[in-house]
Amino acid sequence: MKRLRLLTLAALLALSATSCARVKPHQRETHAKKAMQDRDPVDAKLDGHVHEYREGAVGGSGVGGGGCGCN
Image (cartoon, rainbow, N blue to C red; front, side, top):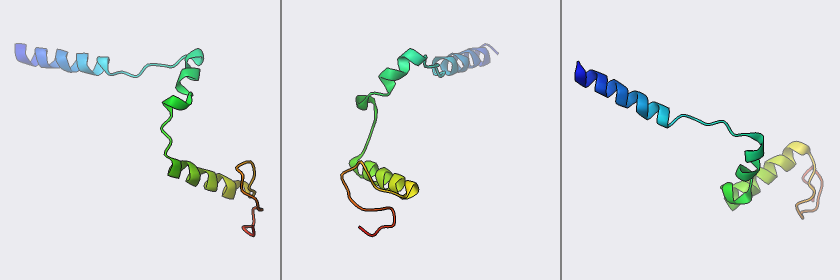
């Protein structure tokens, strides 16, 4: 019985130690910095392509052409 209580207490302590914390609005700037973002160049190019496709136009990324795909 004592061992069960000890295991339960240890489990509760482990769960409470790994809980999520709320981020305050003034702390969000720190998490939004480039150093905190994991951006793979291939993923960034794909994300840009998907954004251009959804918007129906290309612009601002140094590539000419229209949204129809007829550069």
